Length: 248
Image (cartoon, rainbow, N blue to C red):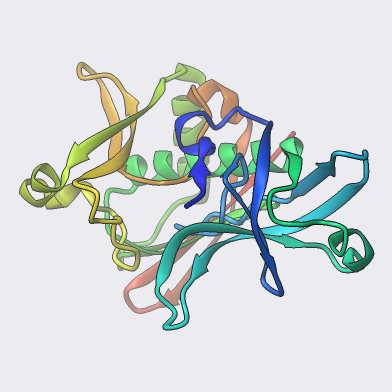
């Protein structure tokens, strides 16, 4: 089982860890700051530094699966091509320093938080989401047209207002009693532990958004920066796609 340090603190950029498994799928550590692909958010990239100073490039991070394809509690770090000679030196129990590509991660955090603001501006079910370092895309279950400029202005207002984002948790029973908290039609919140991680934007006095989410986020909407709606598409009779980009 990999301890997922990023769940508690999305701003951790590195950690010391031990290798618990290495095979053709990648490298598993006992703890990590690398976020694995999930919930629409891309997996982290970065590096492992070995005890002798050698550096292994990590191109992607994924959730592990068992032989039947069911998810496990391990996180697999996928080496970049051309790392075979270095990987051959790594053994189970080896100490490494795992370091994420922070500039890339921070863009993912900013985009992910911006999509939650979209959920406030367009309060309809979400039937697809993709968060990359270059853009974020949300597919919304709706038939009404959307105004690109109005949405951009709405995002600018929420960013400028500087609302706090807070990681929390609710029980499975609380979630069952409040099904409207689940915005996604395609990704169900993970169950089984008795509690579900949440992201809240705003305060009890001025709630902007509250929903189950396992992704990484900024601490305040002001940190998102200048995010704009670059495209709105009609993907089907009941789906409108909104694409976000940054104007850094």
